[in-house]
View 1 (cartoon, helix red, strand yellow):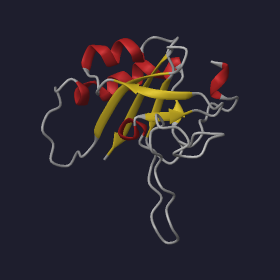
View 2 (cartoon, one colour):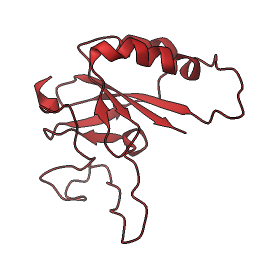
View 3 (cartoon, one colour):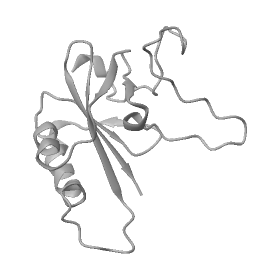
Length: 142
């Protein structure tokens, strides 16, 4: 999709061209960390919004999704998938999505065997833009 930028990276979660609080419908933006404070990882699912590199605003639709709904969105090449697992979230290209599904499936379907050493988790949600296009956002944490 052209609105994701040439290098396939996406911008940090900031709404361009408008200060927080300018609109009563605008969702609050996280505060910038002060000197010596850790830099928080982007968490669009918790923040309920994401702005991509082209300034397109994506808003979370409903609550988290699981299982077959994740698989359907993840494997649809027409829907962008944003994976958040660092300070630089990335768009997952369609050629990598089946492998990603294989990796997250046990976590999002409840079929993961108990492993006291595995602290990985995945949160997933569908987002929509003003044109009603969908985006799947996956946040991985450990």
